[in-house]
Image (cartoon, rainbow, N blue to C red):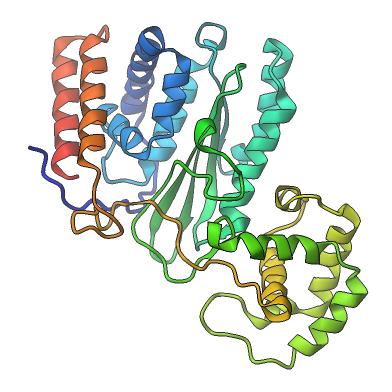
Length: 360
């Protein structure tokens, strides 16, 4: 029986040593090619979007099971492993860490030129998922890593990670095309992190539907009319329950925001998020106006779905799905056992995967 306990994901600085990373690349290539052979390339994206399977996969590759660096290294290993194999696998990967993430659109366009991929579609998905997790959700974790995995057939997955430099923990955001019914309402396959935060603006919650509609309508109002309301708000004592502060309704800042949103005249909340320069502070300004003027309050509940800090063994934030854990681990064991690697290496991987189970 697998013992369920506590797993934390502290921030670890530095890089994976070359001897380890080179092996991670080779092993991830073998495993992914075998999954494609047995189940098809869609299964790869489905598995990558599963937070628990992804974590176990990182352990099989030999990375620290409890480290935030697992995401950075596993994504990089998969990308390098499948580089130049796009024609054979049908899987395309764009993105990276830090400044490299800003090259995602160019990388997608390169695939479009070579393989007739719908670049416009995937560039929009890449930008929108990043905007949701940095602007529509404001949880204190600044995004620094973004990867999109996609196929010509329309399937895609996104794995991105943010860090909180104050508590030195990371949070990972998983997306999968089949799970997304609406990009701005409960869109994630899972959000993985250390703990639930108390002060989170969550505009993609179902509870925020009216707030989203109100914010969108406000964004299309004549700026001069909104500024009249701001003068009234400035005299009101602002609530202390969340991170919206007085600077968020600075008249000069609000005027700039509304001139931009008024000109764009966004038809949907998605369009509003995709406006260039529309960031967290602009969102907070519109949310505050929505609350004060129209009494439409958004959700301030943390949307995290998998908590490694609490493990869920006590039912917080919800009970652990033991069957899902066991199935994911068994799936990896079966795949590893079928790969073309030496038995000694297989034994090491099985041990690492078993250790992962002990700590879950």
